[in-house]
Picture: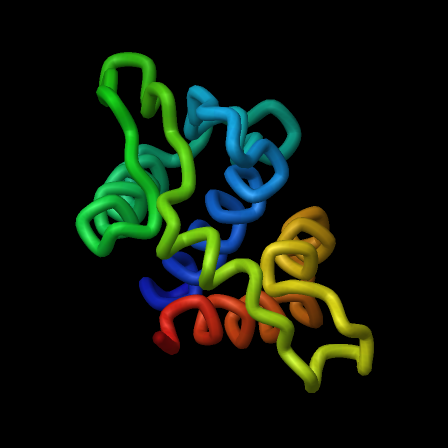
Length: 133
């Protein structure tokens, strides 16, 4: 079971990776599609709440913006990175696999395997880089 910070890091990684993939195009961010439930089991309501608060936090800290949220559908509409979010994801960390990729590129790569223990530590370090401003 993940603790709150591990879950937060995981969600930040997934959200920012998705937005970086689509930048500059705003997208509708549906929580259930971002983290599909395992084996068709419905996503835990507590996890949904954590997603909502994480996206709101990223918005309040000016890493992303959205036009509206529809909680009945667990969806944020017209979500896009801000210049601050893009700048954070365009950083090039030096210690990750010796490859000169941006934080955003690494998040996209590792978000595919974010549930694996090895990827969790990398995502945690990438999220830390995002917030080091």
